[in-house]
Image 1 (tube, rainbow, N blue to C red):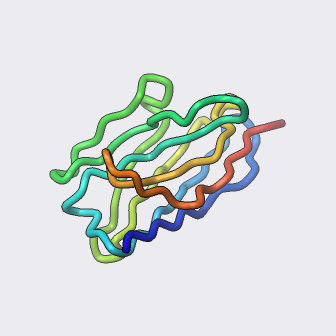
Image 2: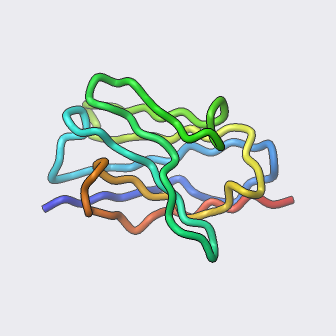
Length: 113
């Protein structure tokens, strides 16, 4: 059974940073493409970025240069480093194997002054 636990969210001021974690069980993150997604209030869930099996990454334009996805194979955990945060980054953030239907509970990120 796949289980995904996101953590690390919180409230920060614009320009601040946060690092989110996604601890996985039931899957091996290093052999799966893993995606980070977010859902802002009143909006549909959207893709933020992906880390592929070979470790390469791809980001949506609205986070390029600010967010970085990485993984720790030993911990079976994927991370989302978020820098230069903006109010429009406020959302619940989720991770899941790319293309799968598994979702965790998400972690709330609020960017506000």
